[in-house]
Length: 339
Image (cartoon, rainbow, N blue to C red):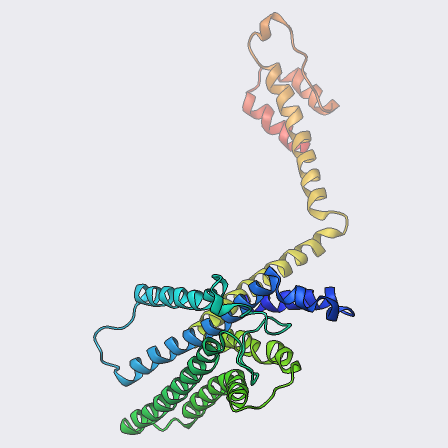
């Protein structure tokens, strides 16, 4: 993220001063934005160096001493990383404190990098050599030796328990090689340029731009993939989520297929709606004569004489002759006539 901010600042400045940069070179290099860009670039690159070194040493200790009772937990790791961030922040911010020794420390080039790749000896060159050459070289050698040691120990352990897993060894070797190569392509060119400049070689000024755009961002771009996105816990979690999503997707597709089948059956004229409506109409027609007749048989009707409802002539004649018949027989007769 910090390296992305630095590249964004440099890109905006390049777009703003394009075509007339020579007129504003000194103004840009002495500006606050250029000083901030140099601080961000140094902080990002050195934080990556220290973080990778800590991760490598922790892995080495876990492999060399697998039965150690106490290992670094989450709180210990947070404390270590807090110390690393504080140290790197201090190392990157010291040149901004206004000390005479660090005057124009981040103004040596148009891309605001404090790399010492010139035979000249400006103020603060020893500090630059210590940060970008000594620290980076020590970290690269430590990471290289640690991963080589881890690979040798892992192979010896497998041979001791007689587990011939050539694919696992090959995958581990490829992963270690990839980690070491990314560190090599990011740090070794800067180290070589620094050593060459200390020996008197003159490096073209354009090299600063190539280093800033194509070399420094390598670790920032690849490290998230190597140390997070390609690890077993992350991939296992992603596989579980993918399986869960696939199951939910297949379930939703099955339900949609069933609903579409029902909709296809009922789409031609709204079959179910017409059936329900016709059924309700028949029920209403059946209940009307029963309700009329039952209301006519109530005792008082509040003093109002109720007329008998006769559905047809045959039933009317029968009711006149059998007026005192049983209520149940009349209901059966009405039902048979309706049906």
